[in-house]
Image (cartoon, rainbow, N blue to C red; front, side):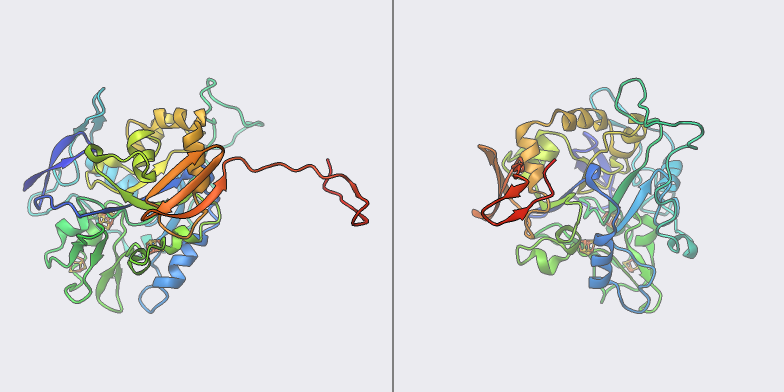
Length: 378
Ligand code: SF4
Ligand code: SF4
Ligand code: F3S
């Protein structure tokens, strides 16, 4: 085992291979507060990439209702239970083992293989709340913290294109590779022999086995689009405008005009999913503001509570950047917020400008000029 750096854990960790960072690392930010679980992203991905025979059960993009939604069944519960003690120091360093460090004898990674039927109910638990409603009659909050007594939220999930991918470490054929130009993690379909160690190892359960082809497949980050400067299908089509794609720098090379760097490293608003697992995932989530903080810390790490407070402060630069989500079908490498306008750029070219605050126009009921009555007057 080599030693690699993991800035999300604030420590080094054991990994099968030496770190060879890509020239750029693809990243996504998802704002969970805006997701409406319309599943447009899921369908966009499905119809683009997995409509073939043997792919019926595959959802490279899925949206599950937390805490009881899972695809495949109980994926996070099972890996967290196996990992046992997980805690963080006061300085935010991870104390406990990663899935690589906790690997059983003879395995590269601590994991498990879902049963076939575990993939069969991607919408299980949809819209269920954390506890029985009982006789609660209002949307009461607990202790003024803003967290609801009863809560649920939608978690959109794709492959995290991790820096230390478990799928890659586990494959005995070295069929999984990380592209040096953009950090996208792919399975080489020529090399794959269907051993499914990738399925067993990925804690997020994002490689999926195609029984027809006898090989595994996974989210490809829509790389043919990325290469043309365009955002992935799931990002482009998102109705709730919860998503933005770009490239993230490591914390020692932060560019505060880069939207990924700003949200992850500067504002510390967007957090990795289950960072304690150790794969250094690159889909970053803005946590929901109404959910129990203990649950959020388990799911997004020790910065979850602070991220919620930052979100609620609604600082102008952050609000401006969030306004740009869903405003362009390209990935974004720079942004600017100035004089009430937010602009997104790629390669120095402006992609779009949007007003941070939508203007409100009050119209008179009776327009004599056009000889019409307008019924939108309040
Ligand atoms: Fe591999 Fe899973 Fe990470 Fe994707 S999320 S790169 S499949 S370990
Ligand atoms: Fe599917 Fe592309 Fe989104 Fe991956 S990036 S989940 S392949 S639409
Ligand atoms: Fe390797 Fe997974 Fe194929 S373990 S051989 S990429 S099924």
